[in-house]
Image (cartoon, rainbow, N blue to C red; front, side, top):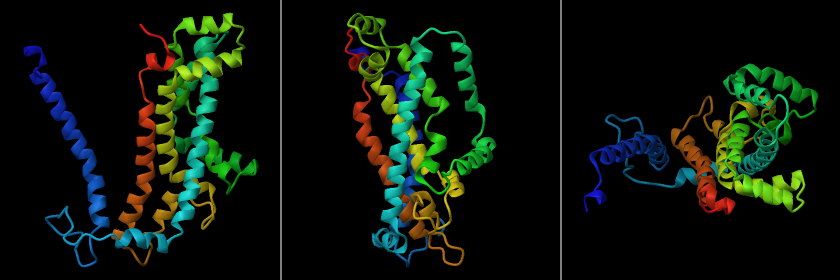
Length: 278
């Protein structure tokens, strides 16, 4: 009976996690509260009021009439979707030989790839821009996607996942005459589904919320403008309504939450996904 009771250490851990969750949720709740406050309420009053006195959804509808929100939403959806698909493909193709094949210089190549994580994007931003322009990708969907079609973090994550796949699966596939590409596609990739889903979530969030690169590679007022750039235009130089900006920000966050809710069901233990029981 005593083993079922939570220890003080477990209680302290749960209390710490709850406190961290509350701290993380406060900015989001404040953003939602600001978006739902009526024009007569002072959003800068002190002490601040979290709950609006007269909640309204006026500004959520106003966002759609102020900017072409639907077009921006479509642009971000296409860019984020293609970025996730290409990132998973190229990272999985790069990670597999680094994990399962033996060749000279494998560890050196992997170390060099991981070392690039320490390089800030601002350092490679100008060379990437020049390369994008010379390839004729300026102000195109592919130009926005180009720097994110593969990542060192993704290769590292999937390599570690490939290393955890039981060798028995690989040996059985080879005995059945499976080719190297078939082994990768039909055996190894399904076995690391949790890692692929995790990487997809990270890539989607990063691509959806990216502001700097689309700002550089897209023309001002381009029909390819992404949602973060479109929401930023709500904060005009001569007319700034924080309720409208907050409403646009809340709407831009919803697809991220939806994507996470849809994908988290596929995050299962690797043993279950590989079909191997201990």
